[in-house]
Amino acid sequence: MPGSPRFLTLADVAEVLNTSSAQVYALVRRGDLPAIKIGGRGQWRVEAEQLESFIQRMYAQTRTFVDEHPFVEVDQPEA
Image (cartoon, rainbow, N blue to C red):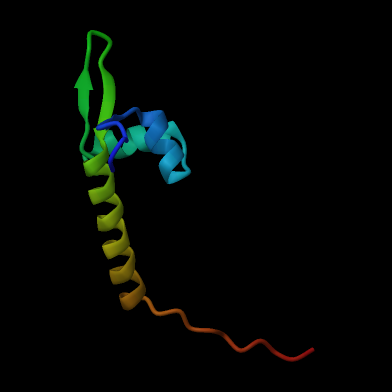
């Protein structure tokens, strides 16, 4: 990602993932999304490379889920 910042705030990550900052904080605190805590007030930062790795892991987990739980259409009765 040339020209992009190396580290992102939780709000930045939330925007990328189209979710809330609270959800991103939960991902970080559970250890699902690696991050660092910096400064006296302990602000969280996520390295852009870690975010991309997380996204790829989620794609892999989703593929596994879909493979293990195939979608089956249920025939609807005709009206």
